[in-house]
Length: 108
Image 1 (cartoon, rainbow, N blue to C red):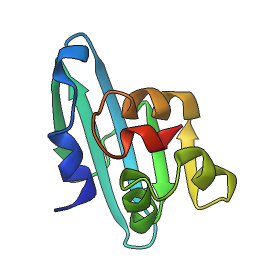
Image 2: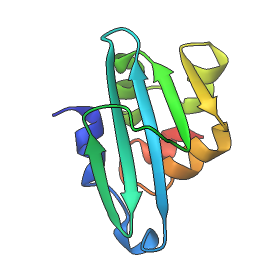
Image 3: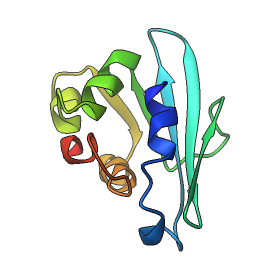
């Protein structure tokens, strides 16, 4: 299962009933782009980069896999340059904080 698709089912719906956020993902190594949107307690994966996002993560697909599997942390990937954020890094941390399970703890 694609790591982003797996996140759809890990949304803490009860904490996001009043949330509307969209995060973009650009996987530079595979030229793939996606969007993850949280709206009223539901998370939806978009098969392309949405026109507007609150922030966009630019990295290799394997880096996101490692973050979600807790093999590295978001801050570590940003520090070593393997992950870049277009927008506010705190927005990305907040976005990922709405998800439960493995990966959520590895974001800060």
